[in-house]
Image (cartoon, rainbow, N blue to C red; front, side, top):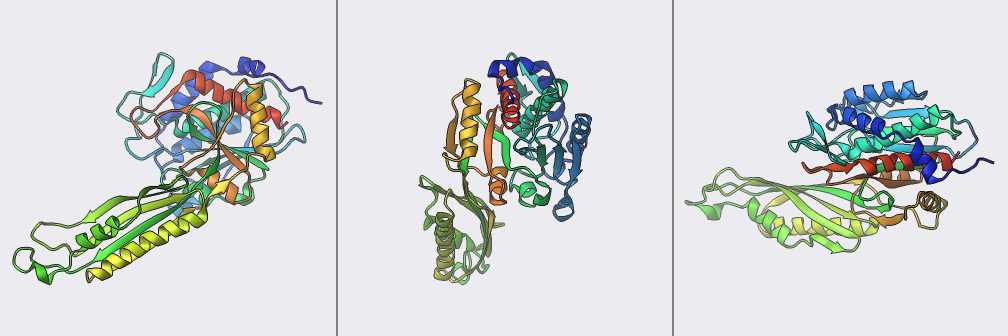
Length: 383
């Protein structure tokens, strides 16, 4: 029988300065969505040096990105449960390049002109540190995989098109959530992207406005008749983009709107999207125009029940660390959606980052270290 170590023992093995140095290195490698080639190459070097076999799928050929997803595998020393850790290599596009990280007391942040990129390079750093500890202490472990995805931001495209035949793990832990360590996302929404182009008829707004059909009026009428923002405790919707019009003296002939709808239940999302589509069709018809509508299901909802072995195991691991697990649903999508919907039970775990996607993004050193301890504890618990 393998002796289960305490959280204090795991903490003693984590090298805080090494984690800081690793995160600082990674965030300074530019990797906006679609341009993850440089960071992927560096991660391949690091993981290969730690004994993992690294391969890439070929989805870059489909998406036109610099690289595919990175899939790394380490053969286990025991017959423990094969597990996988996943983080994404990309960062939000702007302002996400030329990051200059600074250590401000007990916190790592950018210099204030860019994001930091702890979303999600803190997750990658936590895995690398745990693997370092495993190797240098010759600790037993089951089969391990790391999947570092591309283009997570803005669409989850890396995990959507991931070659799942390369995934051999029975459980996945996605290291891509913020808030206190111990936060666990067991449920996430489905999301639809909704695009519509309203088409009317141009006319001189001062001379003969009655000869025109205003696409702006159609869009406005449609939006006014939509249920938007918080629909219920499980469903949200928003119109985020409106484009059209060139001058005030022209009755605008074409307007484009882009929106989204999300729900923790697929059937509720179906209903919300259908409602928004109907509002657009009705408005266009009422004002004598037309509308072209395109909807796309970016990802479907997932839910890992709280009484499943996966959730119970995570609760036990956090309890051993002296942390209370907070199991909750999220209104945001993540690679966790696609893992679950491709037959790999997965949870999204916080790695401690705060205010992601903003110039105020930061992570406390203590939380970064605790994230490394968490990954190490999960590996040891499945050995």
